Image (cartoon, one colour):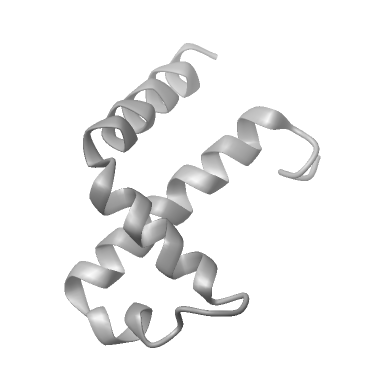
Length: 71
């Protein structure tokens, strides 16, 4: 089943995109910062979300890991 049709899989993909974008921006900021508009701007926006809401993103990742282990 595609991640678009399963809500839990969609949340997992969004969390992974936020975490990956934030990490890439911390390691190589020029990769993310030069694409602020267009479809690649989603990575810039998700990196901003990961930076500003990092405690909540971390809690969401832990919650997602616990639900994956329980299932």
